[in-house]
Image (tube, rainbow, N blue to C red; front, side, top):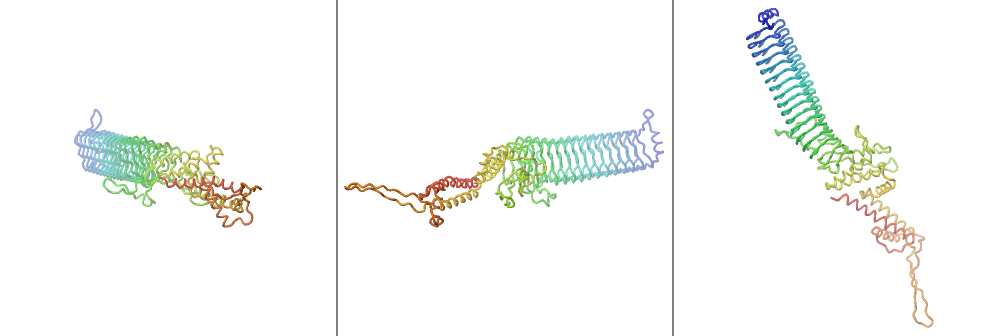
Length: 633
């Protein structure tokens, strides 16, 4: 047992008169008990320093000490603060199973040999800021009950944190990992900050658990980054991180957001599959090579994300915001119908989505995207914003890509009543119609950030999508977008009133040549009106009879007769009889097919027949055209 006075006397006897620093050879303090402060500051241990199982009841002061041999502190207990700041460990530094009940201060310490902190317990703060580990350091199964700072630490050898537990904040800001950094099965219960570190070797966080926020902002992973099966119970920040090798997040689980804004993936081939209960944010990220991204996430944000090679994004349960993304090679966004399969053959756990209605994928925005190389497969486009998309006519839609539909009901509460026939409708048309003063119920109101695209902006969008469907040999779908294009043209402010009137007539008569029922109703109406008019004023009273007149010469000879026919007489008396109906129907049916019935008509009936022969074949043609547009392949 050493009192403070006894220890001071011992060290004074060993001080170098030139420097004033105590010099010790092999120091045997194993199982020693230090009652007062242990004043070893600036001491030089020429041989091994044995403090195994020692108990420091007051402060242990080893600041600027030099350990030229091995430093053994295994199972030591530091009941107050332990100060090793600026100390130098030239040999092994062994703190295995040591207990630090006060602050552990290793700031700016230098470990030239291996450092062993396996199963060490830090009950208060642990300060390793700006320390240098030239060889391997082990923190396996260590427990950090207070905050721990590894900011600006240089890990020149392997850094082992397997199964370590961080119960408070863990800071690795600006740390440098020149070789492998292993955090497999580590547990982070509070905020984890690994901002701006440089990982020149592999970084392994497999099976790690982050119970609060984890920050890896501006980190550089020069080797592979392993986060397989890691669990992040709070948000995880990887903003501006650089992954020069593979970014392995297979089977990782994010209970909050996973943020990769402005991150760089240089050679990542596979990213995921992973599960994220919140958002996966890749806005501003850059992918340098071919990559496959597999996410089961609530939302994927890829605003201004850049792909420099081919890419495939396979998703489940996800809403995708792809606004202003940049890619020069084929890129596919596809819905995965079945759970992702991991390399071990097991399906990815999807516990955060147990209550989700289905695994469908919805695209929220493609604004600002050059869609020339974009492929969408089995996604929901009912809420997608298309205005501002470039080369939309070259977009490829595969599988069951769905759009929003027009309101199906008939609205009788206003005059004239409004009925919208079923057709594919863009979300932006929903928003525009809902914003009009006389909007009917059923159109979806714009959400925040949707913008205000009107008919002038939506007409070319419909036109481009129509061409994309036509190129894909999907004529019925193309017909819906042609209808939408014509609707936007009819409501646009930049067309002359005469053209708007023509389009309105085209819409009213046949739905722009796409509504056969509408054309047939008008044809039936026209035929009915023709029949009624013919029965009323068009058919003659009776069939005109022929008369012959001539002069017989007195002396005989050739007799000449003139044969004439009476003019048709306007009808009188009963006009709406079965016989007259049959004649009127005959005239009308012949008019539909451009034929003359040969019936005797009054002057009014002649003009009625002429009008009928002009209008009714046109209406029949519009009905045939509408049917053709719906069945054409």
